Image (cartoon, rainbow, N blue to C red; front, side, top):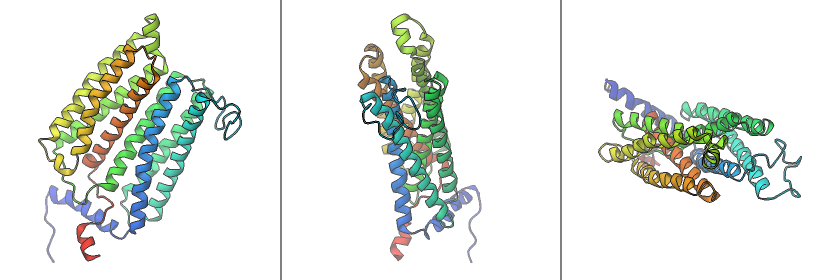
Length: 325
């Protein structure tokens, strides 16, 4: 019997190979279900962040004065208007995300013997995050939109989006995924941290209505200044990530569409941020679009981290299995 080669590269390669062997025993229906659930979860959490932002922009955070019901009902028919609908639909989306995460965890536990060991852990962590998200959502109502609670609410949602996007990429990555250089992976991590920091600054600014106060009364401008200054390093890091991918093995690993999309979104995000201030936050659609691009950037960088930093095996059967099948 041939002995496996030794060395750090062979050990690293053995982990994906071992994981692929485990996945080969999983029914195709289970693999498809996991990929379907995870993809819908990414879309649902992006929508959750954007609808939450629209709820704040439209001053609908307390449109439903109670929690978890809205005016004591599952569907507040008589009180329904645009503001109530935004708050009600935001809660409904969060509830559906919770149900989908329970299903994801249940499937990963039921087939734990043939699925990667990381899947139940990541699914469980995502469920913990959405539970914390729900608790913070309740506190935003109980505490009448306290700034710290609102910021923590959005931060938790972004962390959940980052995790689910990376998890989905792990489930759909090609059977053979060349890893990019270490410096590129570290740059990816740095860009993600800078982007999250910028989002948290934006959430802190928005939860305190600092931009409105600064534009109208010249108060709270330090938050606006911090958010503007924080945009530069985050934008430079993401653009550098996109440019660097053209000279590394990252593009060969199937990362080119993800990283180029992220790089192309940066100018649009900056432009929307400038327009939001030039229009003095008077056009909700522009502000909401600014938040949408931020959520998409978080999802894209989460996907890149899932491919590059974890380096775990996908759920797709290998070409050898297909040949024998």
